[in-house]
Amino acid sequence: MIGVIDYGAGNLSSVLKAVKKLGYDAKVISTAKEINEADAYILPGVGAFCQAMEGIAQIKDVLLQNISEGKYILGICLGMQMLFDKSYEDGEYDGLGLLPGQVKLLEVSPLKVPHMGWNQLVE
Image 1 (cartoon, rainbow, N blue to C red):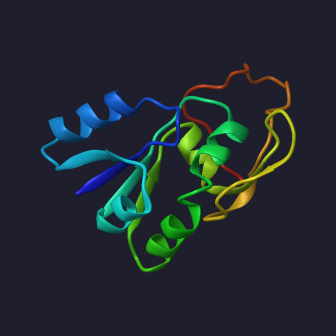
Image 2 (tube, rainbow, N blue to C red):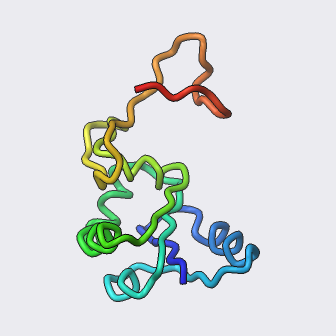
């Protein structure tokens, strides 16, 4: 079963419907017991980084433990940002630390902000 993690915000129903349409068993989860029972996770997007991290605080340790044991996680939009070490959205906040790096505001150069679409990733 794929657990769509409810941290108090996010596009839960859209993600749940998409996963089920693809033929997978999925449900919205929010407790440590449900985290342990899921085979993999989706951390959906929509919301502010600080509030999202506050919303996931109670299940953070059990989630990280399960991921360290080999379970997969997919982050969508804000959920992807939460996987990194840190974010600077409206302050400085720690993320889940699953991916090395920091989420920072794009410098206004030739790119439009918000930046949508494909581009190059550089270290």
